[in-house]
Amino acid sequence: MKIACLPFNPIQENTYVVWDDTRECVIIDAGNSTPREDAALDNFIAQQGLKPVLAANTHGHFDHTLGVEHLRQRYGIPFALSGKDRFLLENAATSGAVFGVKIGTMPPIDRDLDAEEEIRFGETALRILRTPGHTPGHVALYEPQSKALFTGDTLFRESIGRTDLPGGDYSWIMRSILDVILPLGDEVHVYPGHGPETTLGHETLYNPFIVEVLNGEVNYRER
Image 1 (cartoon, rainbow, N blue to C red):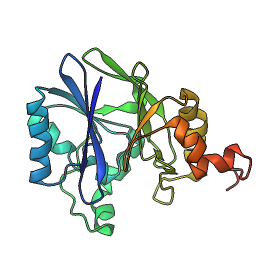
Image 2: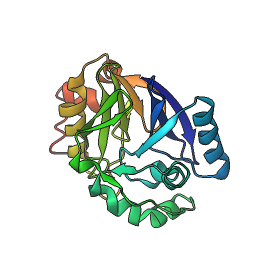
Image 3: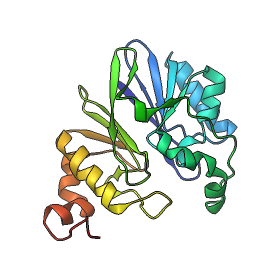
Image 4: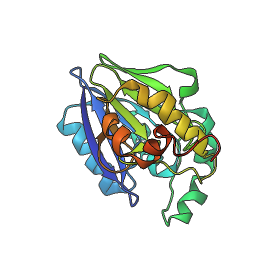
């Protein structure tokens, strides 16, 4: 499996193009927000000779969904997102205004990830891991052979996602990290929704939110 990261939009969200030897690809968290960014994504897809089959999202915040409708229209592909995050699409214009970002057409959900266990393309399957906390319907996508994990805004390098936005919950995001993500193993490579890549081993040692819980310094269920 091959992975390319294209940081897009004013919030510098990481958009991932993921493909295998069949050249079929999935675009994860399409954040392209201008004609120039649309062209950059389209040109990359064309240069690599890829065939998009799905736009899949870890969650529904506007900075991760700005480019989805472009992909739906240009390539005729469906949009996959947890139905629990539908309200975020409906409120995207208001949320964008807070950050000074103009919001265009938000896509409808074509495939509800709440009803699926994996995303398949070419010869590859991405496991859908339920990781609520940053948003109610947040998921992570995991490919076990390459040990690649797309964490969206649940886990970043030495940090975690915000839980003070509508639908956020600190105890749930920590439960997702500690009970769902960390057991995958230290060698797993993390591709987050913002910022640089990392590994779970690095986060176990250096992520302060994780370290303080593992060392018994804080009870995240009571915070």
